[in-house]
Image (tube, rainbow, N blue to C red; front, side, top):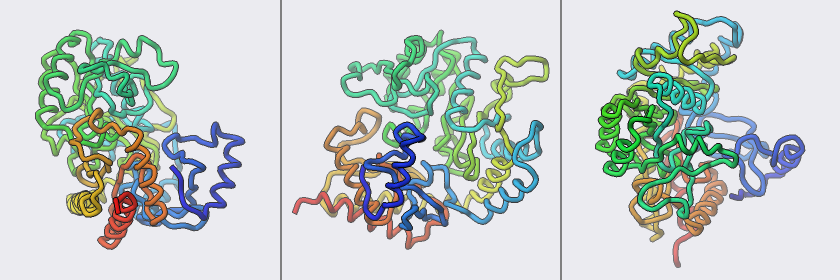
Length: 438
């Protein structure tokens, strides 16, 4: 992915970064060629780079900043806590307050365990399922991203050569992944009830859990069919495995999260991103009997878990303020602008006679440069031509003052006005028009 000039200061910073960071990079997700754009500050729904260029932020730190940047309520909450202390070798009331709020919104949740990232939350949820069931294997959907834990990232981006016909196979994402990790990870297809249930039953006696994101970003951001999630709920009980919803992203879909929209209660839920108010955060939440594996009151728990900065009060207080701002009215507004963006994208593709579509729900949208139906990882898989179009499209957005994810993800935020949305749609339309056949 390239970007427009001027970017002199960003170019200089990248040259400097290459001397102390591998490839000049700490997060693969923000890398772009020939060099990334460096942020210097954020204001509401805009981010300003070191060269002074302001853009409407439609990625919001990969869906975490649902209230945009430097929201005064969140700044005040964090600043107040910073003046009292940032972290202690003691618990604080702040973790109780945020846990109580989360439990009040998710009927499946009695207890919450905080950590520092979505990746860590997924890791601890999988370990909790193993501790509770005494079984080794997990099941996860092909192409779904669940963070950087070895087991969770299996079959994240298999190429067509590795699809293994109709039944998905477990493929390593990172070099050096141990073979036993692949053997203990069952890959199931997304939105295919018969195939998924058949595989789960086949391996059921060894399965600790089924891990599923109700709207997996990297697998196309396609909402799961309710019947599919219901089938996973039923078969998990049939085989004695836990059902884990990954709502690190999907919790932003509604006041009661994705599980409230689909009306299905998992055993465990992983959370992150928006619950931290812009600070690092993760959480495992669930029913008391499942969460009891963390309980130290009778001695060493089944699953010991620490974390120097887990439940630090700055994150807890900023997260509490952020979640309190996300009331029913805020979600109604986010749903409305999300619907406007998705319909506007589809209208732009049709108007310019370019194959493409938008998928997603709530405040999230994802652009696909294809007119084929998109229902799962394989149908969403972008070949070389579609990938090249996406790179050029993102270049066009940057030229037109909009920042989005390099793979087509758009995340909206509460500070966005109707005028901001129309500006975003104009940039999208202009970038799509670059592909129109004259």
